[in-house]
Length: 432
Ligand code: 0X9
Ligand code: ZN
Image (cartoon, rainbow, N blue to C red; front, side, top):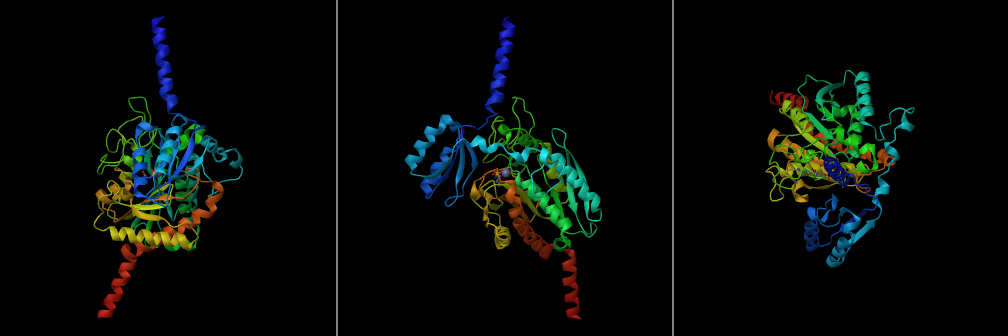
């Protein structure tokens, strides 16, 4: 009997731990805070402590941008008092959970229609799409098996090159390290689609190879598709010895690991850095791609959402910038201008650490360890938080594509052997 009681109590506590992490968010409120002075910015930073049980969806740089927090009913009075005391401008969306039910997850209606590039897809559908693209364009596309995710999903790197033996500079783009940021994999797939199918975009391929990994965290991605309560999951799905799940992949890279902006609590749902650098098989795969191609890798972009930021190293500190920061900054502004010219919103351009310091990001690793000269994190879209509506994808993805054209043009100009040979020939002729 006593054993039974202990067993039941044990079960209940495991259930409780599990349940606490499976919030439905039904009665949560999304509160957007708009600081207008530095005192308010500092006050908001102090709110960002675990004891307040607030879920920070987005942090703001300073003014003219919101800090978005999900507030459970138990904390709502506290936050309201805080807003009053600090005299903050704010907006509230009550019952946030109802926004999390998305028809976009339901595969039924799409089975007969085939694959649209302007929709969100299951990981399996994405893989099938990539296989098809590779089959249809064997001259241009190869898929490299990278290994399997923690739960056994096969990860494939899409290599797009019109001349794989030309020793071209490589642009490497990944997406979806954060499970809930669905618009990022959608953009990565759109890039594949345009580079392969659009005859005009073929220009972007001459002299540059594009390597794209559309879903870095497929286990987390699939988890966000399974239920409303999981839609805001961010981390991987590896299990740790406390019975909690996941590591923040973008705190798990081995450069200045865990020195800032991380949690050391494995049960923290947001920024747990992992037990050690590269504890996650998924980040190891990205690292391997970088290491294997380190000599040719000239641009790395990690796609995330949301907030319309384009940030560059350092991410681990806001106290100083890399020596070459002006190059990073100026290319980011060129990209932002190109997106704006295409009708999109400009990006907020700055170093990641000046936005908010957070160590162990892939951008810092690419820049600081691999030596990739241009390295960025791109936070796609603004508005709708992580729930960017599918119906707007056909508007924004082509706008972002223009930004990638600008990236491509710069990499070609600076590093393409074809172009440089050509320049060399001209100089030779000039001399003779
Ligand atoms: O915090 C992150 O990992 C990124 N923002 S997100 O809202 N998508 O989670 C920004 C990462 C910027 N880079 C570094 N801090 N290294
Ligand atoms: Zn992210």
